[in-house]
Length: 63
Image (cartoon, rainbow, N blue to C red; front, top):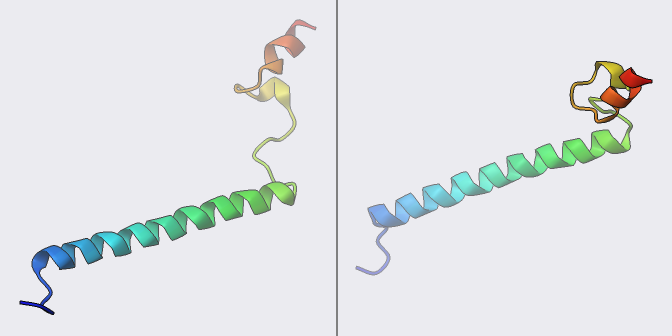
């Protein structure tokens, strides 16, 4: 039957729509992160002594 939409077609359309929505959300998150970085907003407070992820922390503590 040409022109009929089957259950498989409906599932493929649903998957495509969900994929597009997720791609848009991820794109907006990345855009927001880049925008914040350009505006100088960052999660880093500039205090390396209190940062557990900073490689300079041990160096500064020894000095």
